[in-house]
Image (cartoon, rainbow, N blue to C red; front, side, top):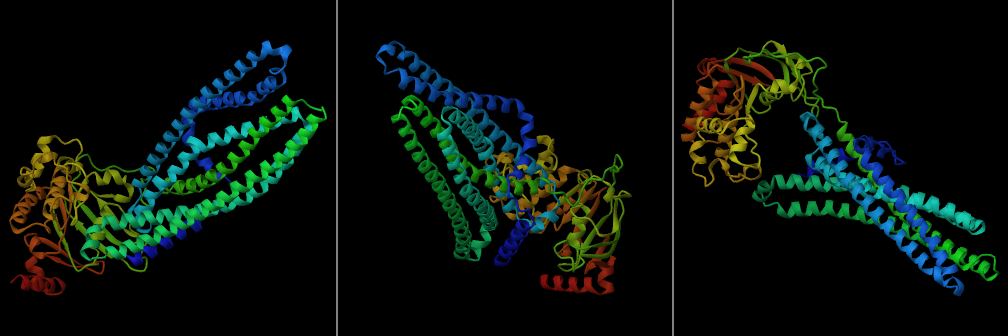
Length: 602
């Protein structure tokens, strides 16, 4: 696990190093395609924002009227008008703000949902080659933590930034119209504030990217450990895993606190600088009031406008950090969204016959896994399997048996040679169309959280309850299913934790039976069964294999003695083939394996 952690850290560093150094918010442009379908709602939000800002900026004018005229004896009858105008403006501001809040929050939720779906849809179509170097925990982190950052921007920060930008610009214009001298002093203060905001902002962006990578590391570590919790407990490595997770948590926490500290300092510097400068400006204004150059109401208007501008500047300094973090998150998400699968559908895919037979042919195939390019998993491998024929693949671990299945399913593409399905090169087929005609039973079958019926029907979603029951019966699974309190509606838990290994295997076999595909790939499909159930399932598989092409990976030779054709593999090559009796009589690798296994049984 320590080595896996090191590999993951290296991969994280590789991904981070491969990203362009974004010194602006340009990566956020990638979110625009997700916003375009909702232009109408954006228009309503912008209109509400303009109305809200206009109402906000009108308040200082009504306040000026109250001060200049509301306390005058000869204008006492007009004071109610100024109060009503002030209250009306506040009401408009509240209604417009509520409208803006609703629509921008809706946009944030909707856009993030669309991004998550788009990224998940793309990742689901990526080849296993991608997951050789990218752990699922990192992908999940991007789908959760990174999309949350974008949601914050679209559903809040962007609106807040735009509102404060409008308030800032309009407030400055009105301040200039109110007093040119005082406004020039304020502009000088704003320019002084922008320098630390920009410098601190770049620092925050760099720390945010490191913090996001550390968070992904934490999520990946937790996911890997929890997925193997039974192994961890069996080897009593709870303390080790707790310590390892604590290290990733500590690193993530340290970076998050450092980022927060920098943002806090940036906010403090910006706010203190601005309000200190504003105090100086107000001192000059007070002197003008005393000298009779401006009225007290005019100074109040200027103060309120200055307060709105100051609030806008302070809020923008905080939002800037959110925008930078979201820009980094957008880069990470777009990497996943635009990741191109190694196995893609041809521009003009060919089609299989209407009723494919499942005949397959490997012709001088060579293949090396991307993560192990120095070693050939298959080397000049050739194999022809006629329609309806059952062939077993045997050999030591690493001989290339599972690789044959991986290539047949087109999870990877061979570097040399060709693979044909019913005479058609699978490189010319749509991978989904190819896999639709293949049924697989793995040695360690995957059972999804949900009901037993749903797991069996995963082989064919439109199957009827009667067909599901028939498939379960053929796989010798009906007997244990009927004993469960809820039968086929029993929820099996994540990865089928409530079932035994043999029960999970029989469900996987039922799933393959229900799929009714012309090609069966069986990876030691009876390895987890006891002797009684193995006999039942072997009978079911024998019936199922009739008329179908079958490739069987066999580790226990006793399960494939009845097959007429057994292919012996070693170091990625087919080194011998024949029946069990022929291969034993011939000697060599198969004879040694048979002698070892059957002598152990005796």
